[in-house]
Length: 249
Image (tube, rainbow, N blue to C red):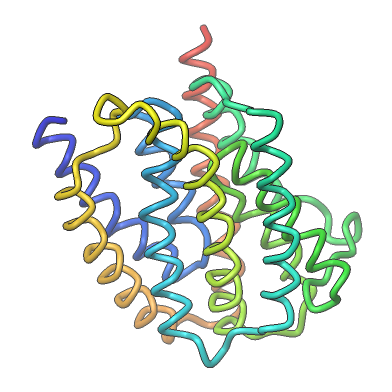
């Protein structure tokens, strides 16, 4: 990997962690696309999983007093089941399909709220969330907008939403690392995974971005938080749809 590509990944890790630290999901969406631009699909999945595992895990630690633990445990159970299903069918998207899925996922934020009456604070809904979000995470690399559908009807405040979503995504990213990382480990050094020193720099960059994002979050109102989240992920989605079209045609 060239030094230019390495610098790109490290800077992307910081900026996307900053974005997620503020809005709870947009950063992962940007990072997955950035990685897919410079890495093979399977390597992008694993790299994204490793970086986002740290970013989400650190965010969950920083906001641990706000985590809704009953939601987290139900999510985790269903997440393990979803990982087993995807591993069994050995699904692997092509790069154009990956960008198509990345472009379609953000559009979920515009579904009319009365269409899907989900509430993650209800145990059955948390289980459904864990299965569907992890399955989508393993197909498109990200699933933040889908996860958000399960939180928009809860009575959690913005700190609880960011903290609990971050904690749930620890399980989704672990699933991604295991499902896509196991075959890469089997082929050893030719797997194409970035060298260790890139992760050694990118992981602290993610943690720093998450910390700065938390500082900004404290200065954003609940109303602005929800409105800007929808607008940002939609703009990102439209770019990915264009990229999918460009790769296919």
